[in-house]
Amino acid sequence: MATAELIRVRLDAEQDVFVLRRLGRAAAELAGLEPQDQIRVATALSEAGREVFGPGAYAVISLADRHLLITFDHAHQEDLTRSEGLTLAGRLVDEITLDKGSVTLGKRLQPRLRPAPVAEVRARLAQLSPVTALDELREQNRELAGTLEDVMRLNAELQETNSGVLAMYNQLSDELEETNRGVVALYAELDEKSSLLRESYEARNRFWATVSHELRTPLNSVIGLVRLLIGPGGDPMTEEQAHQVRLIGSSTETLLEIVSELLDMAKAESGRLDPQPSHVDLARMAEQLGVTLRPTSERVGVELRHEVAPEVHELYVDEGMLLRILRNLLSNALKFTEAGEVRLSAHLDVARDEAVITVTDTGIGISGEHLNRVFEDFYQVPNSLQVRSRGTGLGLPYARRLAEALGGTLELTSQEGEGTTATLSLPHYGGPPELARVLIADDDEVFRAASRRMLYGFATDVDEAADGAAALELMAAAPPDVVLVDLLMPRMDGHALLQRMSEDDRLSHIPVVVVTIAPQRAPRDMVVLSKHGLRREELLQAIRRARGGTA
Image (cartoon, rainbow, N blue to C red; front, side):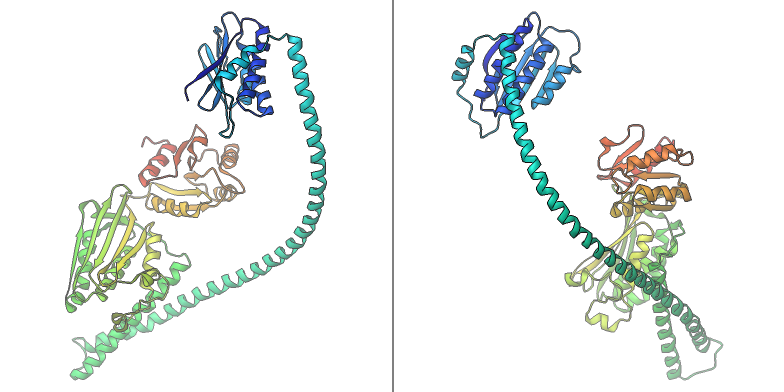
């Protein structure tokens, strides 16, 4: 609705403020406001009026867009922004706007309220006679008396409610104490079971590592003896004998591969994968894999191709781990492709600053129900080709663990009957590492994992802490080159952590990057990043700035 002026009041003297207060309350009542809101409006007007009255000052009361508006025009030259009266007035209304020479107060009208017609409001306000200070004081005393009666009534109700709450509290305390005893007993039981589970897990890893290691030696010996028998210096054998020996050698090599997978999985699960990055020629690696695996591909009538973009010809990564991942993906693709091609492609994702390597085949594909399980240990997709192929079901789980150890990800997409695409994404960094150690203090496990991937190759070691207290312990044990701090954490939040660091001479010099969902709440004297849409290059540049660099 358009603005409808109700009445205009001169504010030349202090006496006029009393008139304005009375008119403001009447206008609030006619606009449909509750009694308490009427008193708030009247008080706000008197407080604001006391600040602005003077020669030429006046106030306009009007209705506009479901608001009761009061606009003051004045000739004061001083800054009224921090005046006590206007500060209090602002708390009593919904809106306050200060401009040079004017102040506007606004009180929202609820949609259910039905104000009187504008013409009626104007007429009623015009009939109100001027009031003296004594009259206004008497009116305020009546308001105060009514308010005190309400307070006394509410106090009596509160005392009655408190009695009920106290009785309920006593009852709940007894129940809570009994529940706590049960929880303590349950925690003790869970702790015992966790210890047993941990011991069982460690025993299983020791078993696989020991058994796999002990099996490798005799298997290598068998393979060596087979090569001697069928080699140029061996005794002559019949064609059938040579065939049998070659079968022994082939089976032994297959068994050695399985044993190696088991040993590598044991290392991966125990967290003993320690990448040693170096400069790797990806194009050359793809070519070597093509030569190694081509006999197999030719035997089944499948063409093996590779295409590596110039931007990712050279990667800074653990060469052995990357080789095992790609060999595993290519072997799988060739195993389940009867016709067509298997293609290894690599390109740079500029937006995410990642090297993306895909292995795509035109094979039998994987149905949706099995696709979700291919990364489970020992799981094998049931199909006719699987029956003819030998394996442990550990290849893809192991490849994913290697990818994660390299700071990357490994995902699979597939359409049954149309083929499968494996996508390996790795941080693209030209190395060597710029930092020795980075600490991530954040209770969000997903964000810590993402940050670890972004820091791969940039930092030699990355430590993690789920709260400020744990971060302090890690920093005391091994001071990092830089710490990434989230502000919202349990136990000790980011603000408390930063305060503790500033008070400790050993920690106060450590550069800090604040990474938070609320950058506006971060300290202004620090390097601050928003978690939303954080990219790797953005994070690395922020770390360099925090350490005093110019990036």
